[in-house]
Image 1: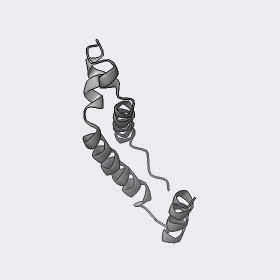
Image 2: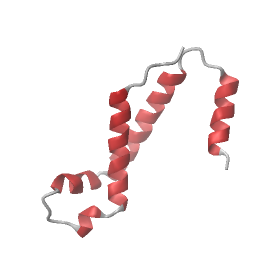
Image 3: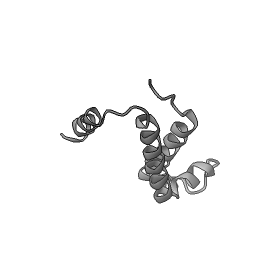
Image 4: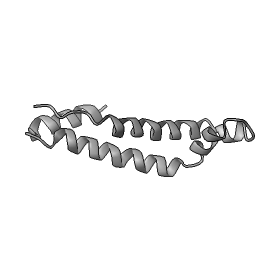
Length: 84
């Protein structure tokens, strides 16, 4: 049986990834005084966004694989995803 996705966590993880992406664009340096101050605010917290992203990713992986896990398939899939 497959675990149901947690849409709220996945969405928040997407927001965290977006914060890091915006920070890498240096939005706050290009447009320091724009009406989009919220975007500049998001770009100013990249460390917290990275931490939040990894915490939520770990939680989601734990949630998905917590029921009836086949460890052999899990490690093969993780190795295949990481190994170049």
